[in-house]
Image (cartoon, rainbow, N blue to C red):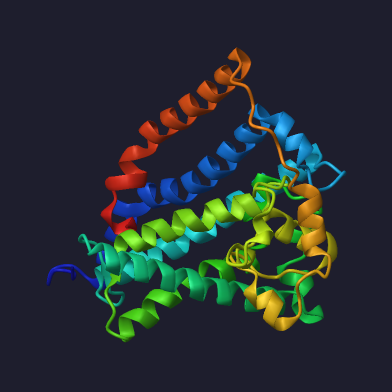
Length: 305
């Protein structure tokens, strides 16, 4: 879509921003609130399991939560700006994002491609932000959360938020220049996968099952303990996977030991009335949130997917 002859490029851009403003803000804010809120609710409802798998003895205090949520709202605004910029790029034809349905195989390889490249991008910018020259200005704020919580996921400084948010538009610009019409649904899956994995990494309780590291293929997928050790020790810079840390020698030497200590085998619970009530509460809350947000998170805003 291009501006009409009677409409200047600036006016057309302002119209685009105005028309997409609310939906984009809801989308970026909604992903954070739903993912972090659902994880918090699950840890409260299944607090017996959570307590048994708590990674650190220290608990986050009220000040930690206030700092994390307030700075995460700032991050949401930064993500909102880059999402709007991406949509404007699509409208002007600079970014080639295929909104129409794509074959399942195309969605699958596009999703795999963006996850693999984002993992590499995250590892190396993370390493860079830990250098003495950049740490204080970019990454120190995130490390104020010595004991991570689900709300730590977006607790970034403005500079770090901008660097993190830059990946998607840069990725889409490069793929567009290569002649790849990236599948919109693959992008939709990626954005949700990114926030869910982010919240899982900062949950503060080991979410992966005992024996996870005993299976060779699964060792490459990072766990909650893997990232929690980063906050407490400075090792482990990877996001989705552990291979960059293994290849670069930055994985915590006692990672497997720490994971096995945290991932305690838990017996399958008896379905008591109290447990059933807890499960029904969280399911009802998630269903209500999904129904409420359905229009602008799933189908109503094609520019987002």
